[in-house]
Amino acid sequence: MPRRPFSRLWDHVTKLPQNQIETTPHPASAILTAMFGIVSEQNNDQVQANLNAGQPPKTSPASTTVASTSKCTSATGLPFHTCCEYIWQKCHDNKDESFYLSQADKVFTREAARSNSKIIPLHCQILTSVDDPYFRALLRECNQVYQFPGRDEVSERIIPQMYEVALLKLKDELKNVEYAALTGDGWTSRAADHYMTLTVHYLKDWTMQVRVLQTLKAKVSQTGNNIAAEIKECLTEFSLEAKVDVMTTDNARAMVNATKAAGIKLSLNCFAHTLNLSTQKVMHVPTVSSMLAIMRPPITYFRNSYLAKVVLKEKQVALGKPNHTLILDCKTRWNSSYLMVERFVEQYPAVVAASLKERIKKKDSFKRQQKCSDKDVEKMECFLDLMKLPYIITVTMSSEKRPTSGQVLPMLHKLEQHLADKEEDDKFTKDIKSSIREDLSARYREAERREFLEEATALDPRFKGSAVVPMDVWDRLTNRIEVSESHMSTVLKNTEPDKAVPVPVPHENSDDDTTPVKKPRLSAMEEIFEDEDDDVVAYVETALPLRLRIQQEMLLFRALPKMKSSDDVLAFWQGKVDELPLLSRHAKKYLIVPGTSVPSERIFSTAGDIVSAERARLDPDSVNMLLFLNKNT
Image (cartoon, rainbow, N blue to C red; front, side):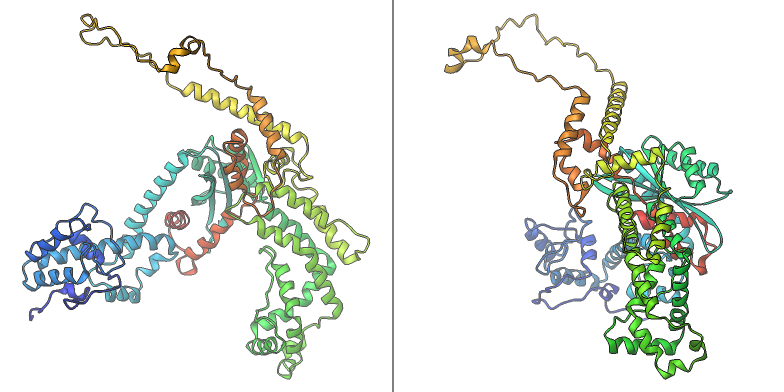
């Protein structure tokens, strides 16, 4: 094989003329960093002298970072073309080519591995991608040096190592957490395997943190006791036994029983799921079900027929309607019936105009469609007015980064007011209101849950003056804080090590040292008032009893102006740490508790992308690790 005239290094870098200076960062900066390090301006002259003498520059200790400057300078602080000239001279002589190429290989490998550590956690189908021949061919074109890992290496070495690192990091972070809350829910994959996901919620520097603890495949029947054993094992693994008081779940009886059996004090029902169960009662009202039955056939026709889609788009453009597709409801999807009616009313003029086209009318499948009357449209509009508030509440409660447990009772109160009967209501409206109201009347009536939600609402500065906050809640909070602070002080006293009594050490040659101690010289003012200065006694304020301090903070908090509903509650309490230390510490218990189990539900969307139809047999341990990395890194 003929010898190459130049080094392979020039496949990755470009040699510029002697007097030309590059003005943009060059991709070879990382290579130069590994070879030369970062050289400051102070030793720039020395590096230039070494280059002229044919000696490689000395590497700086900070050679692991890439410097970026406004001028075209390499990682050494020298003009890039100067370093390239030096590399070219050394490689052209075929003396040190192996050294520079080995350094380049290390840089490329390290940078590629660092990129993989960012891509793998976020890529839901990384195991499929690494085996894709077109993807691997693309990588070879981009970088012929780097050997991309295969499927076995990714699944058996890289992902487990990344999982262990992220797991230890989360465990260390949870050790410093004072209070935490859980959410949990179950999910069934395409292969009919049942998984249960647990997420943890806590505050870090007054910022809400949501992390996935585990997504484990169920090996036994998911009864209350079996689920409780899984929850206990998870709490023990992450050292959360004494930090979790509340767990938010759906309304399944097994999950509620498992929470209590696991030693968690309170099981809070998901408000969004509860509201969805109540609104589902509306669909069984005869007038509502007949209204929806009229809508579904034409919606299905316009969604499945290519010709109908084309005609509908033409009419949307002609009538100035948004180019939206009609929506078909799904029983298990929250608010899907509301969205279906909303979209149908929005596109109703375009649907009617498209139905009048001869190309559509002559179709036998369309002739069987039941026509919608103006009275049906009026019912749809009334349905939207009544169901809009439940829809907005569901969307609001699905927030992940803001406290929501204090919003449950105020929103429930708003909903009760919205569903109250009015004189002008017709039978269709009254039937819808009564169906939701009767179902909600039995919700959140348990004393323990109601008290917790009342206390969470009272400590929310947006709703502390709400009608759902009774007057006795402030006495309950005072008692709870007093008990909590007393218990905390007792624990600190028991865990505090005994202070060692200092033993005086005699000074060397103390017996022989007879030099009198020299008194400091007094100033003129000190000489005049020396007798009075000796009689000064420092005034020490007596500490108030704990209960009185709590009551004072309560009065101060209640006197503060009410916040807007859009204000940040966490920012409020962060700013009151010094002014209200007892209340702010106790408020964390309520701020971290989510009002819905949506965080766990959100995990299932990602799980569906990972356990796809082509990868339905993915190992459950791999599913757990991929979900953990995807949500926690």
